[in-house]
Amino acid sequence: MQDTIEKNGGQIKSLEKIGRKRLAYPINKKNNGFYVSIEFVATGNLIDQLERYYQFEENVLRFLNVLVDKNVLKARQPSPAQTEDYRRQVQSGSEREQTGLVEGKAS
Image (cartoon, rainbow, N blue to C red; front, top):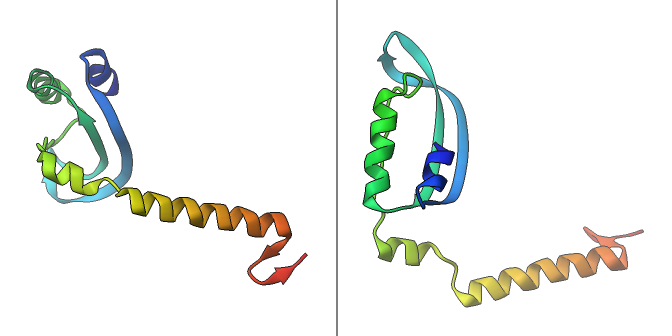
């Protein structure tokens, strides 16, 4: 699926292999499934191709494509202030390591 997305002009933002989980109900006499979540950006044309691929792939039991609103995507991005706070935390942590003070103990 990753190859199909990238070859057709899509861009993968995140790939999370959730792992094997018990299904809520048996599907094709199977009780367990391997869950994967892929967040990607693509055109509607690619979505049609992926859904067709899912339908013919026997290892895919169920699938769900979700269109995320642009406002939701914008809200998920950290603000510049949050980014700066995170950068300060990382820098102060590296300064503590350089001075030998980690968790209040001197080395």
